[in-house]
Length: 539
Picture 1 (cartoon, rainbow, N blue to C red):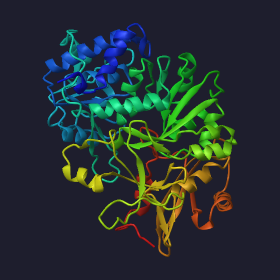
Picture 2: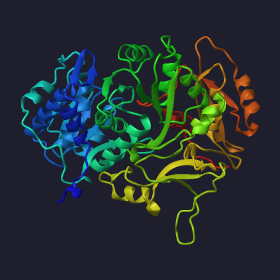
Picture 3: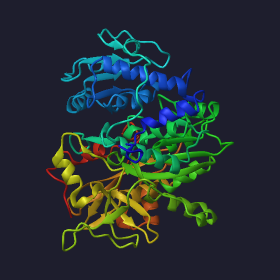
């Protein structure tokens, strides 16, 4: 092997930051402040502890934890011994967690005490040992279960140096499970190469540098925090952990730690902008958003705080973000409404990703994918390929082959291509409403409703209709002390877009069901409406 053949791995990021900036604060977690030198030592000791606990190269190690120094360390310690990290969504039910542990064949499970307590009636077939992680103050809970403590696991380790390298850059570094809203969740495999390259993309597009103070409002278990545990470390920035994403908690840390970067779904941005403690920032701040298309209303509200919005797009299968709505120089002269509409688009491929295309359902004469017209109106499926597309689904070759039909990863998202080459997401394929043969984008309707001054949050789905096959129905959350009638909102929609797109039924709710990352769980709303229907009716 020559120097030109050195496999790339994000493990090198921690090695470099610990060498170059050993005394720089790497992590703030409650009262704890950990330097890069100390973080490297913790990771090394943890890696040895895992190895002494029987974890070997190629094994899977599961974590059930909120954003913490321990979960951050796992992103390095687990792959440091050749194993793969399986970070599990903490809001899943015990049967769902059981399924993921068993499907991934995890040999060790580390979790926070109250989360582990929920699993006492589950059957973890391959887990040989469970480890209780400490609470934020370092204490443990007596749950009446025989878990090894994290301190005891660390005591098994040592600080004998380990090589910060990998023999094969296509080795699996982590497995992230999809939401499973259309069936059993799938295990998406990331590689060292993909994680390394997407980290570089995030540094570039989110503007990370050594002065970055990154607030962890995005769960680290979600797509490995969009590769943030590796990217922020590569920039030698500071990770600031937050365990519960509430408006007051966010603003407290934003002010006390001088936060200048954070990420989250549009609902997180809405929480930030509408919190009682919200105020205009006295410094620059970059907020990256994805998970659902942000409405122009949300973008304007966040920009009014003095923050810069970076709108990205991706899926679990693309290591999180793979496209970005990259601003053009001449956009600076646009009015706020026009700028917000442009920023609401999903954009172009990121630095380290391949191209993003929008293709027609019908293929060409030789089975090739055919692009839609770049006119901003013809709808097709968004597809992508390149270095930051998954290795495949763990243990599911048939699903992997289906996802890569035609040599491109099929997102299941419907979008259009604008004349300037920017993609805009119109809907998930399953969320599009086909009413009387007309396609209705639920996103378009939602964005109109979000622009009403009384509306805080909204979800639009298709529901059965005996005449039209389907029709749109809206679920609306109003702002505090706001009142508006359903008929007024329906008319408001008709005043802005075609009348046939307006929901004929609007239900007011105190809140919408959401995932841990703030995405609205439309499948739950849809299941209630379609209960008893054998299949969705198509007009």
